[in-house]
Length: 229
Image 1 (cartoon, rainbow, N blue to C red):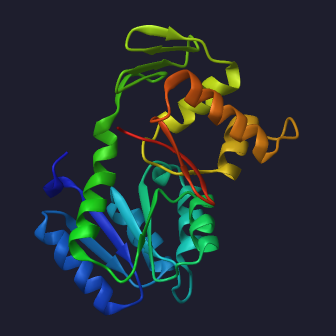
Image 2 (cartoon, helix red, strand yellow; image 1 turned 45 degrees about the vertical axis):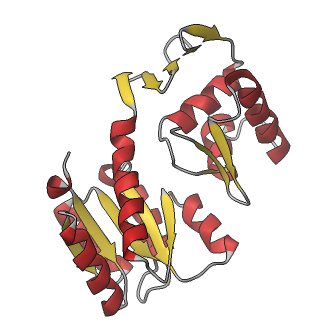
């Protein structure tokens, strides 16, 4: 999908920020919509169905964290890219954002070229992974077959334990997306057993030993993500 067919919703309570971001994204060929708080953002998103939503964290009426959480609970926004735009650099705000389903995080003050580069990269994520079927992913030199619980690297079979496989599949299903430890626990182990952060670390280490160090990277203080290259 070209930029001219992609829609971006910007939600921020600062008019200068909205104007700056809207201007630069329109120059790139995107269709841009704007809202000044979380409530307006959700209402507008339901009408225009954007491909990507950029949310400020600190806003009146409804902040970005709550807006993201509510939209992720709506089926039509389950796979919509959501990015936080904020001047707050505290680590806890980043963690809070990823915990409610954010895909990325862009800090203010905004640098237009960096912003455009980041958004272009995020929207390319859908095209970077070729899904052979609903349960099979091909990315780089890996083929991950969920139905058969098999992984092939450059044509060679890689033997993974069940949880190692499920962790790899989760991360590879959205390359570049940061998964917090909490979301990994919820998706892989649910509430069936008592699992510590150490358990996740051990499984990540095993994946790196079997596939190489370059596939899974650590986002300090937050979690892990699957690298495209």
